[in-house]
Image 1: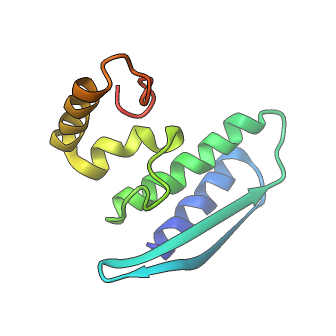
Image 2: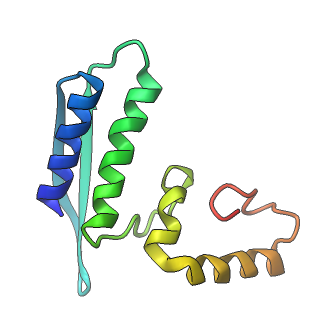
Amino acid sequence: MHAAVYEAADSAYEEIGRKGWTMCHMSHSYHSGACLYFTFAFVFGDDPLGEYDTVKRAIQQAFVDAGGTISHHHGVGLEHAPWLEEDISPQGVAVMSGLFEAVDPGGNFNPRKIVV
């Protein structure tokens, strides 16, 4: 996981033409594994949000490709929602969609941002 993320981040920095830094620490340890917290930084250019998105997506995809999960106790969040199906399966997303529809039909708690 660690090596895959660093490799993905380095490739993304090259893609955006920026020098970047990637850091990691283990924040939590569970019986099922460890939670690695990655932080990245770079001096942005003319398209800060696009450059951020390129690096963030590369790193996030590396998590999923290496068998990791997209989140832990903080929840998924809007930025991680595109990987939800890869993380918990299409069936898992269908279950979540059914639960939201049953208990929150007005979309007050999930305004179609994480599970659509």
